Every structure is written in structure tokens, then in C-alpha cells.
Image (cartoon, rainbow, N blue to C red; front, top):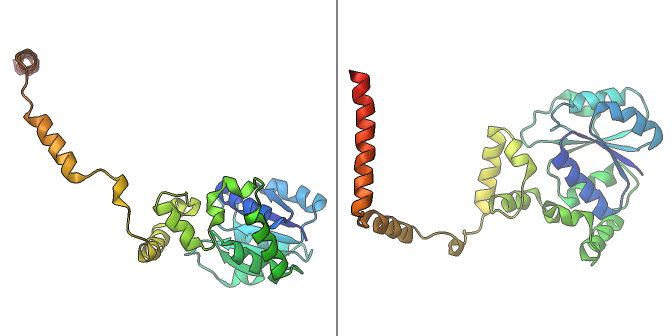
Length: 233
């Protein structure tokens, strides 16, 4: 089984590519609609993954256009948490919230293909335990099992959640609520201590100004005053 992903969201593309790499599955990508026909004719995918979070590609319109060709494609649609789903999405075989977890992707692939759950889970486990460098090592986010943990990593500064900053206000609030609910106490040992900062500021403010510095400051003040006094005249 061969898969094609259609998205112009390059962070999302890297994420999905890394997941497929961990599973050892063939994947081609189209970052513009102009690339799709050539990939369809040469690569001949069975599964088409379409992103609803692309910048210039309308996800559901793309699915409708491809479905009208009656080629028997199976569609997996990547949507945001707050995406509005209507009757148009009935032609989609699997809807997935993005970013999707490795196990979530496995379940989706099994649903639209003859892949076996145990086989894919075994490939995932083997990939994670391998000492060889993997493409997914370049994308720490892939190591998370669940999207909520992935978002927690972003908030704690351990990795970047590509959807979080680009999501709308309602989606960010939903994710913040979920993240804060499960977030561990922040380690304050690596932060500046407020008392020390205040003490340092106070010490700097209390330092005596030298006579020379005082003279320079007075000259500056006189110069500025003279500028304004000339304007008044």
C-alpha cells in the first residue's frame, strides 16, 4: 500500500514523514496541487492523506475533486481541533485531529488498508529501540505518544508544536486548558530569583555618582533645555 500526503504546511509534512519513516511505509508528498497529477500517475497511491491546515490548499475541495475521479482512493483527513465538520466530509474515510499520535496514525491506516495492527506496532517498537539514526530523531515531537503530551513539551520548552502557534484563538484556549490541567510543577531552579534581582537593582540605584559623571549629566540637561528654550523664542 502506498500513501500520498497533500499539504503545504511544511512542519506538518515533516511530522507525517517522520511517522511513516518510523513505520517503514512508502510515502510521497505534494506541496502544491500542480504536483498531484504526476504523483497519482507514477506513484499510484492507494491512500491519500489531505491536510485541512494548509495555507493555500483547500483540503475538503481537494478530497472532493480526487473522489470524483472514481479511482477508489481511501482518504485520511487531518483537521484542527476546532474545525467545523459538515456533510461534505462524509466522503472522507478517517478524520484525524492533527498532530496525530503514532498509534492514532496506525489505527487510521489499518482502517483504510490491509495493514495489520500488530505488524505496524512491531515496526514502530523496533524503530524506537534501534540504535541506528532515524529520520524521526530530527523531529522530537514524533516521540510523543499523544498530542496532549506533544503540546506539553512545547509549553515546557522541550519542543515546538507547529499547530499551536498557527491555531485560532478558541483552539489555543482548548489546548492551554488541557495542557495546564496535566502540567507538572515548573522547575524554578533554572530561573532568576526575584529577590536577587530586586537587590541588584537597589544596589545599582544606590551607587554614588562620581563628580565627573554628575558634571556630564548636568551638561546634557543644559543642552536639552537650551534646545527647547530656542524653540519657544
